[in-house]
Amino acid sequence: MASKIPNGDNWELIDNDSNSQYYGKKFKFHFSYIESNSVKNVIKSYVWRNYKEGNITLNGLKQSLSVFININTWLINNNIVALSSINNNDIENLISFLKTLISTRTKKPLAYQSQKKHIDFFKAIIRWGQLYIPNEVPKTEIFTGNEYIGVNRKLKIDFIPDEVLQQINRALLNEKNPYVKYGIIILQSTGMRIGDMLKLTTNSVKPHLISGYTLTWYDHKNRKKRQPMPIPNECAIAVEKLIEHTKELREQADDNIKDYLFIYKIQQRKNKDKIQNIYVQQITHWFNAFVQNNEIRDNNGELYNLKAHQFRRTLATDMLSKGTDLKAIQEVLGHSSAMTTKRHYADVKDKERAEVIDNVGIIGNINKVDETVITDKNDLIWFKENKDNNARMEDGYCTKPCSDGKICDRLLKRQKCYTCSRYITTPEYLQAHKNHLAELEKQLEGNIYGDHYAEHFLHTIEILKEIVKRLEEIQDGNNQVKFATNNY
Image (tube, rainbow, N blue to C red; front, side, top):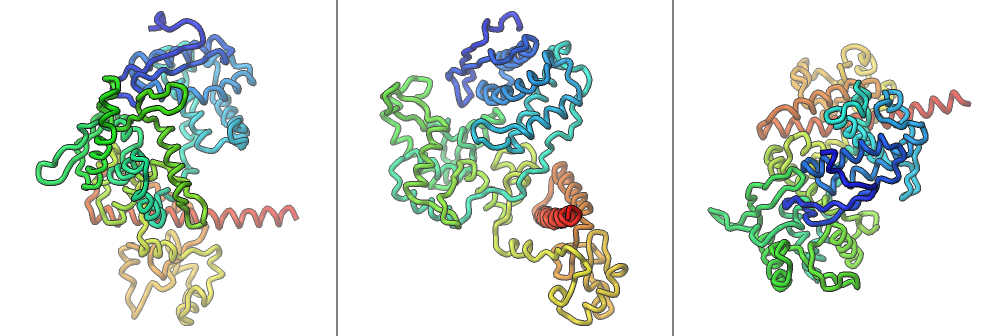
């Protein structure tokens, strides 16, 4: 394999994977910036072998390799000429370097996810090297496993608000660009990734055996063909309209793209009148123009920052809000794990449950409970007398565990206390909530749940995330006050 590696530091590789979104496209790789020949050989071997064996797409290799420029700068600054010499202390040093690095594009410190991307790629290089070229990389473990584990990820899912979605759908009625108009309809209906949509073919839609239509496409991320998915009539019509619109273009196109729906004729001077696939960058540009031309704005009056992936998240959110089973949502999105679906896509946006979360009892100091928290005078007196014994729970306080001489049924069964108006928690129980949340998420990842249980289970996770978030905010505020007082 190594003897076939191209000569020189400038490569031009062609994507030969017929199932790739970038089939036939040329990708340029430059390695001259890597000073160490030892390091350069490792990176070249990694790119070449994964390219030849088809383990990673060319586009994936190109995107991943983009972060190595910063890692290489760190190697040079620390006089590291061979990856085999790196130890765990060096990894800690690299993490510190990434935290202080300023992005050349944004002129701001690297975002948390960007830092994580650097470490993930470097870890992939080392892991690969330990398997194929063990003498060129560390033989012992240099990663602790706790590097960038995702604790800074957003707790709220970025779906499109209903008000914005209404503006989008009204604007679609008069939209002249068919790729935008029908593309958005397809994205809303299926939740597919935009890269998969741009590779839809003329035979993607088929009549359903019973009624309606189904849509079939290739899932490029998981590298497999998706099972036929039932679609609404407006989605089937959108595909049919694109077939009609591209009919003449497909008759003139090269054989390798003549069956695709998302093809167009280039209008710019370079390659003018050439017929080719629409790339993600092009349709993203059209989406931005669509928002600006129709003045689609958010609740703050700002132009809405529309991303194609939000349609996928919005579909999942709508399904969960309507009570759809998590496993069904997982199948629609094509996730291998239900945990991925819940953690990154499925949120709830109906008002009733939002109000429940807003009313979760959280207070910074239990000694500050007064009539604004417990309105009944007798209950307040009882709580102040019993807050350190009978009212105390393992993760908070119950302001009224007994009524008419009977212990609360919720308290006995320890069910739904988080949503009870009598429940209060404070920062001292933050770790207990974190532990409970981690346990539930672990169970969700490894098990399959029925409709009713899953609904209760996911709702508890949702509320726990909000409790943890608010308690952390209170704790951070308290720490800042202590710090300021000590300095004073």
